[in-house]
Length: 242
Ligand code: APR
Image 1: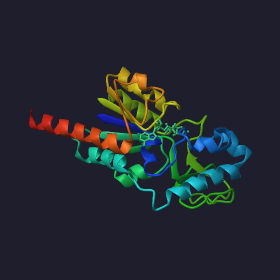
Image 2: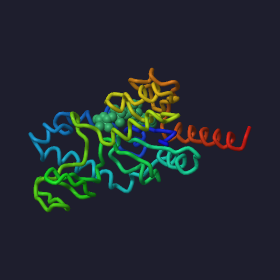
Image 3: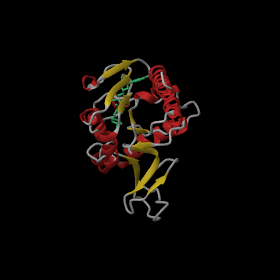
Image 4: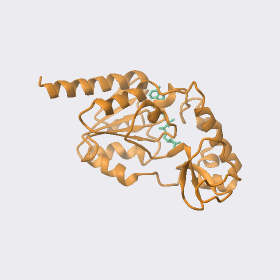
């Protein structure tokens, strides 16, 4: 049976950990153009600029000050303590869900700490800077490495598994995402079509807020733990009988 609770997360869940979002004031897309640093064309035109954009973000993530916050930890607690299975689908490329303790996790937009070889397609762990001379740890080819990040115009990862989860879950919760980017912005509609209850947890109403049964607004570090307490409390009382 697929996951009963499916959680989609976006940059907003990592904001209070000190990682910039994309479209808030001061966000990443204020200083860089998507077409220059997050498209296959941008990489072809100026690979050094793209390597630099991801090298900076990868280095920033290694800062000791960047830690999972209460929202990441609450989702891991939900997974540990809920009798129902939980699947987290994240658009984020940081490792804060892993460090917060989540196990069942799909990075649909890739990961900063991984690299992909365009020669042999191997995906390898990668923590240092990457450039046009980087060597593939798997096939040994020099100069064929790219960030393991899904760029615009590219297909997100794990879409078959994600589709199955959206069709079978009882509850779909979206946390910290603005609803600007598909297919993630359409996940609520799919889950709802197949009968799931749908809840948006965000700092403010997203572009797709109207498609959810319910919405709660505030900082993720406050509203996510509160929601998890409610789900676990409800499940516990249901399990123990009213
Ligand atoms: N708590 C909860 N939500 C927050 C917080 C917070 N502390 N701070 C910001 N948010 C919300 C914002 O209100 C916004 O709706 O997080 C959302 C961030 O939106 P975006 O910056 O658009 O990030 P995201 O939705 O993850 O972007 C999706 O776009 O550029 C691509 O691939 C990139 O995965 C990314 C995708």
